[in-house]
Image (cartoon, rainbow, N blue to C red; front, side, top):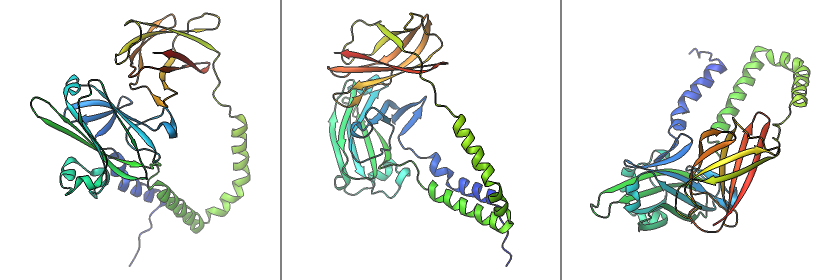
Length: 322
């Protein structure tokens, strides 16, 4: 039997093509739209994010979580009708055998869902933001189930999102990358090119060292002064706010053409903002319109504004007591 010779480059594309569907279908009921995590409960939609304050403080996740720890699930409704519905939230161990491809039909086939449940919050009406706090005890594969029931019509909607706790983001790629390296080495040995490669190694190492010496990290911009005014009156709890941020240098010159991002949270409670505020318009003269800012409880908040200009990056913290 004649075994055809396959070039290492061909093998790479074969492996990539074979495993691309799993990568492309990595998420269930939660998708990313315009850099935001959105969960679809039938036709209903909500911003969805998860925090692990003890692990990564204010960092937001869509689904997969890096560690078994306290996790705060947050849903901010995009449909007003959800504020009148009974919402319940369940987390189960993945006993379906379907992994990332689990759907609501697979959940219906579980004979005893209570035995697989690790967390359950009974139906409740939350008029603004739906919050769930659960501490995972172990890594593993789980499935989140969000249900919404209209109190008058009884119409039922549900979403399922498989996720992993202890997720590294690497999956099978280290194995296949290592395999590709071995294939490439074998090819170099068989072709006699490995000896020639080692002969060129000193020059290659020298070039890499030169690149490292010439590399310099991003510069830090000069100190900026940021103030704000509100278009909706004083900041209030459970209300969407629009701010006008004014950004200027220490010399009083308005900063224009900057990329402005806003985050923050309550450092004493180790959680972030319940919404994802965005600068939606540059008004000129150093003024920027900030929409989507919301506070769900009283206390001490910090609004963190990051300004990126041609001269570098600067971060300013605005303290706020509600």
